[in-house]
Image (cartoon, rainbow, N blue to C red; front, side, top):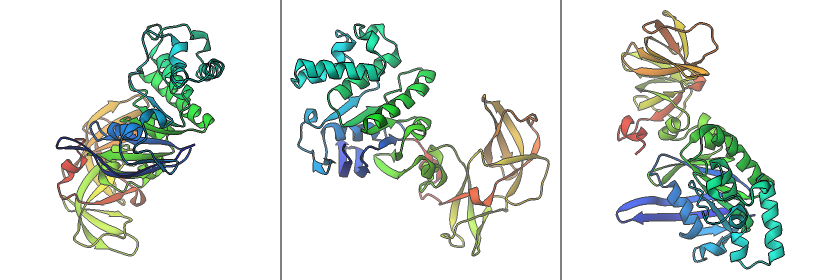
Length: 362
C-alpha cells in the first residue's frame, strides 16, 4: 500500500494562492485528515494528489502519471454516482473501464457490495437510496477499481448528523480492514479527531501543524490551531517574571497568572490560552492560584453541557463549560471566581497582526 509525499507544491488560480509551498508526508496505511476553514486549500491539495502537482506515491513520482493510472479512489461529498446506472453497474464501472474480464469484475463487485452491506440493493438506482447508502456505493465503486489510496473530499458532509456520526467509523474500519492509505478532507474537527491517525491543520494555503489528535489538542504549536481544534479562551498580557519552574504574566487590570513555559522573556507580549472545560467556576470570591473574579453574563444549556459566558473583573469575556448533570446550576449575574491550573495554561507569542486577525477563519 502507498505512502504519499508532497514536496513544495504550490497551486494558484490567477493571483489567488490556493496551496502555498506545501510539503507533506502521509504514511503507509495511515488514515490522514486535512482540516481547516472553508477556502483554506484542503480540497485543492486533495485534487493535486489526484491529478496534478509534484507528488510521490510509493516513492515514485506520479507528477506526469495520468490520474486514471495512479490507483487512487476519489470519493466526493455529492456522491457523483451515475444516475442512469443501478448500484451494481455503478460499482463495477471501474473494472469494466479497465477491461478486466467479466469473472474478475463480477467477483470484485460482489465482494465490495458485501463489504458495504448493500448486496441486497444491487438493482436499486441512486434515487432510490438514502444518503448513507449512496455514500457507501461511492466507496464501493472507488475500491472496486483497485484503489490503493483513497481520497475522501467531505464524504459525509451531505448526510444527516446521526448518519454522519455512524458512517465515519464505518469508513475508517473499511480502510483499516483493507490496509489502505486514506486522506480525508473535512471542515468538521470532531469528525477528524474521531477517526484520524494524524491530522494536518491548514489556513490560507499553508499547513500550520501536523500531529495526532491528542498532540494537536494538548500541544498546539500555533495560536490558530489552539482555537480551531476544540476551543480556547484568549487573554492578553506581558511576562512580568521568569522563574526556573514557571513564568508570571500580567493581564489587563493588573491581574497576575502563572504558566509553565521556559521559552519566554521578561517584558514579552503574549496571548494566554485556556480551554473552556479547564476553567473552574466557584460562587463568590476565592483566593487561590490563577484565580480571577467575574460575573456570569449568559448561561446556555447544550445537552450534555452547560456553557457559561463570564465577564471578568478586567472586562475580558471567557467561556467555561460544566457537565449538565451537576445538580447546581449557576445563575446569570452570579458573582464567581474563575480559576485554571498552571499546567493547563498555554502561552503563545502575541501575533504581529493582532489576535483577532490571527484567529480569523478567512
